[in-house]
Image (cartoon, rainbow, N blue to C red; front, side, top):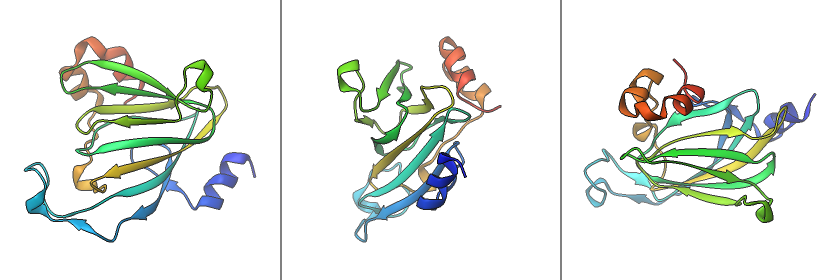
Length: 167
């Protein structure tokens, strides 16, 4: 068994719809009531949720968005390049990793409503991160669009969108 398979087995990870593997590790007992959330939300949300998320250089986390802020925490492996597109179309990327002196950061917050995607930096490598979402994650808040729709929204970003989406 290789290292990736061993991590998937040890952490009981499953395939994620955006790419990679995940397992929810925390979902708060407490909830925020729908009437305390803004109009974008339908239904209650837990205060917070957290997952393990594993990517390999053979796959990527496709551009998607959620309504909530999402905090990425680096744990092990290769650095991750996290790509972010704001609703207004501003593009940035961030290196999530442990080599702070080389410009990597061990934690990054993606603002709710931004499109984001991730890829492993090193060839033939893997990366293990954690993602914390507040208010808690619900697939009702998950938006994963086909490539052509995102390119239509942000034609000037066609290259990065094509690289990190599925048709």
